[in-house]
Length: 238
Image (cartoon, rainbow, N blue to C red):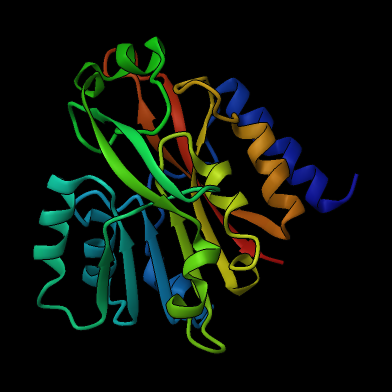
């Protein structure tokens, strides 16, 4: 068993048994990793109201950010937050593997909104995530935006917070991914949305794209039992 296979086996064992002794609660400082990898552009996919990008700014990252958020109410707040930052752009669009319009389900807590139906396990773990409405949105592919999005020789950090829609975003980014040096995405340990891939399949898919797992952090846990349902995975290009 080579080192990559050993790591994948260790990750799966830890996640399956909920043994998080070696999985830290929070990645210490993404801006340090960004500086180490000489990242010039962060693609903040599923930005909600700008929480992720704001944290990067607080940690010291001063490079370009492009945030993507399809929901109209959340996008207005995002755009307002970014309005005083000349290196932070916002696009009101969802990303996937298709072009056109789509219906997104709006969660009560906003950030759990998804293009996919939510399963009962998610609602049990976070009752405030229950869907409360729907909205028609625009959806496009990262590859469609590529010519106007990434400057020549820019190294990219791609962050996906898309509630079970990770595979579709990656499918629509095949020409964009060669520019990506760091990939961050949610990995679900149990089914939370219909049709989503769980962590073993997602880790394998990202591995085939040429990325190695660097770090895991605790993300979504059942508010009553503490059971970890979802983690964030940070991957780097090998």
